[in-house]
Length: 273
Image 1: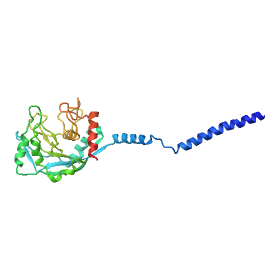
Image 2: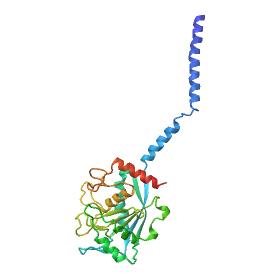
Image 3: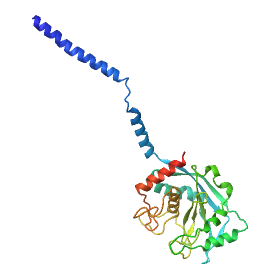
Image 4: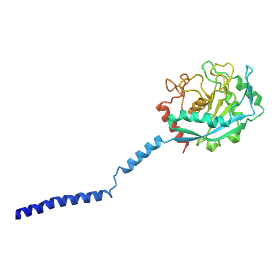
């Protein structure tokens, strides 16, 4: 009987002491910081930031009080309205750039009268007559003429050029077989023509389509042209993918590669700082 009692006491001790140690360990662990907690938090934060939507501000200039005459006799004026921008063009641009989790927010829409300086008529004639060279390059000499038509007070100030504000200028026409141009030396002022003869290789200019079915690309749309040109503003170049490319010079479509998405997001994030 005595041996049984001793065994019972031993059994209680065997249960009691390890159990007590376990409870103390759990209690102490609740106050112990994992040395990797900070690293885990940073990794989680980076993942969230990488996937977060980047919002970029876009100022749209609809150039007014301007009539351009093509050599074929077509008279071109701007026909785009602020409603077209808000309800059709920008939703389409954002549907394209959703691939990169980048959203373009309208900062303002300005119906802007062009500057009519001493060389105004000369500039219009020159722009309407420009053509691509034998290698397919558009005439860069038209850019200072287009820039001279923009109102300085509506541009980004010198200390705003690397900040989160981008500009799209809608002109009636910006040159033969051309639909858009990211003007890097001119405050990155992106110009787009609301009339174009690119699809008919320099023939009679036609009003650009506002949008076009992504699966049946024929001649491109005003929305796609804007999406393409702001891709240039975000550091992307031509021919960096093989088929159905948003940035394609030859294979034109709506797709961005993973490399292009990473490059565009990096360029966009720098403008947010």
